[in-house]
Structure formats: structure tokens, C-alpha cells
Length: 66
Image 1: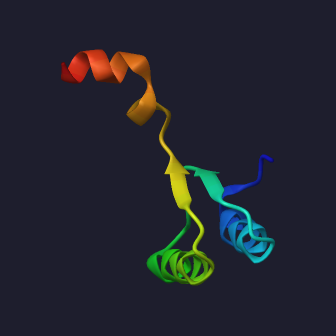
Image 2: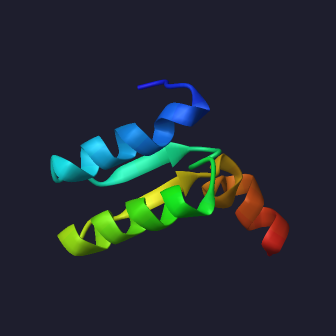
């Protein structure tokens, strides 16, 4: 689902409430209080929440590190 950046907070919380892990495109949230709320909600439900940085898991990044 593509959403405007200011809506990431709302939709991440909705997904967590439904018991879903979340992979959110950057920017993850607009401020620290939003981040803390999402992190607490995910932790309370034992869910994974991550910001989608494509380069982190790209094969070329692994080659660069090697």
C-alpha cells in the first residue's frame, strides 16, 4: 500500500492492531513520539516493525562490504 508520509504512523498502527508485521517505506514516521508509539505497540504484540531501506539487503551492498 502506498501512502503519503504523514499517514505512515496511522497505517502502521492499524496493521499492528490487526496482528501484522510491518515493513514501512522511509520515512518511517514524521517524529520521535510517533516512532515510540509504533515501537511500543509492536513490542506489546510481539511483532516486527522495520523501515524499508532497499540498499541494506541488496546483493550489491553485500559485495561492497566484502
